[in-house]
Length: 523
Image (tube, rainbow, N blue to C red; front, side, top):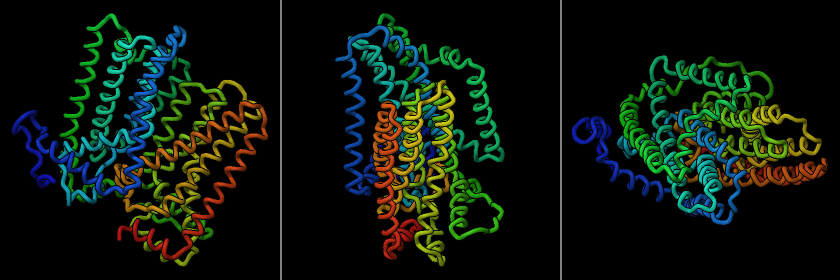
């Protein structure tokens, strides 16, 4: 596919010093074709359908809003006030995501790179192309485009201008986030890099908490630098300001893309022992006490906390919704959506391929003299803790910011929605983990539990199911009847329990368990 890894970096030979883009035009199409051909037919159709829906919604919804929504000065002013904060939150969210994943996901797993060496430019471009597979990124992008359509309703020329500026903002923020992710990974490879990054993260959290607690959050949001870009996007009689802002964003995107390539090259030159030393740390052995199931649960908990992508993913899934909940007070009828979002995102960390957490140790674990159900039970209990823990933290913070006590029906709706979301996630994850396991080593921060295409399909399925159920509970809570959310919860409990029982019955089959073990162990 390309030249050997040691020969692909020709700094200063031609073009921009230190940046070689010569192999990008050949390697990237070949890489995309290889990934497409090795993807199952079902995943291909799912990706095509998801892409068609995303493009249709991203284009159709703003056009429909701008065409059919009557101009309303009050609505326009309200959206215009909150839009700079929405742009800033989009940039911050993808920045935190890139920092947690050390630059982004991989189209080709790292253990396959010796057979298919990629240039740094191709690796970086491939990581950028996987960003739209993130449901959160897609939803936020569509929301920003819809918001500018609301502002520019009844003005087609202004809609085009605002859409171009918003698209440039999304592109620049994504490229800058990838650059920061690679830089953080390079810093993390130094002796004290982890300590520095953790100190910066704690300082940022402390500053954010101080701003929220001091009551100056509104003032800070009003003074964000994104305000100037929003004004340039929606002001029709100042073309010079629009041109300067647009060119500035385009320059940021190009410089960030090119500037990240030397960082990727430096990371690719690390030796295998250096990478292993960064990804692996010695831990003291813990004594095994309690029941067999308790010992297995403790083992799974330690594996989750010691896995870099899972540990950082849990931090991101707690910080981002927590930040949004603290900055934007939500009514109790809207709190049902928070546990759905957190639970579905937590399931994507490893739950969709839950047994991959064992890796090569799956063979040893399957040989232990224990009932087969305990292996599945322990993994699902830890998955419940992962999904439910983040949901409890986020809902608790949002409840404190709600500003008023809920009615009994609203409180019941939020609690029932949280239980239903967790149940939906673990039931689907148990079924997917048994039916379609993947070999995945969740050690490096860029590792993922499944290929990008499959992971995108899982993300759509989980987010749609949990969002629809959360909407149903929100409607039930608004009726004022406590019994209605509880009755809906009972229906979901019956369906989820039946699905879990089917998964447990399938996993008890020696043939199924052997297939899962052999797949996740890579044998």
